[in-house]
Length: 355
Image (cartoon, rainbow, N blue to C red; front, side, top):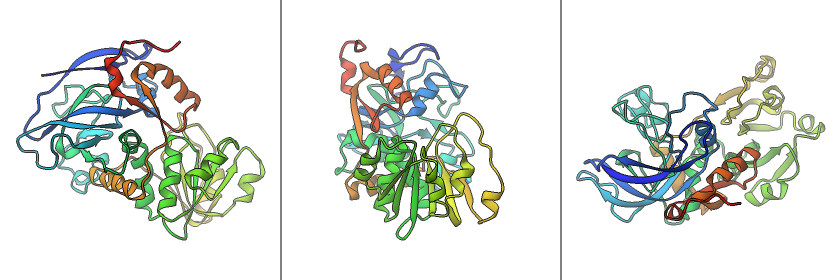
């Protein structure tokens, strides 16, 4: 076994704290990765605090992993020692269901092994995530990080990037389309960058005017505050697509009215309360309301290459691991622009939260 140290939540009430554990030895298809950076996703907070239920403790969060290859198994041909690679939201799948065969591993109908808070192929061994020094992953679930991307800015792409890229590509968003992005946070800021790069006319809808300058800097051509009562009326039947990234409860019916005939509203945010949905906003203009979950391995590589070609990653604030608990509180308050990324070199420093 390989000795590893990281940070873990020991239970739903405890702060993250230093934690030592073991990874499996490198098998024939495995790659040992020395982790350089790991992004903080809002879902890390939800799961570490068991807000969705079913959390497994102790839990080492982190599914936005970038690092360098330290060792490869005998059958590994895709990766070599010293290469910069990434690991996203899952580290294995059944490989035999129709979804897996189509490269849609995120919709695996058998056993999808999440990068943390899950179980490995044996159904027993817990998976531990990227808030740690090293990880061992089957080569089939690893992606290359393009040289044009800074590793710390690439890390959030493995969740926030693919979560927004996948539905925009699936529904064919591109030139001559009007795209509204609801919410300008970790997901929303990537949706703006990707939507603009795809050629769409991008509008940001946010609850205040505070992020208007940021939206324009990121590539949005228009910005509206939904706190103003006239905004939704003004934008009726304006958009071909809406990408809704908001995880707070809000009225989906009001936003559906912003779609043209045959328009599509895509949900990627996860509010904690069920939405009330009326039939008329859908029926009267043949609108669609759909959802999307990350992407498969091939599509994740496509997304990284796309971002590399267009020379953008995520907007990040890099922190030492010792600030992770304070960062969690700031994520909940929305006090980050736009993604925290942990510098894993800091794991070698003493444990101390800032005053």
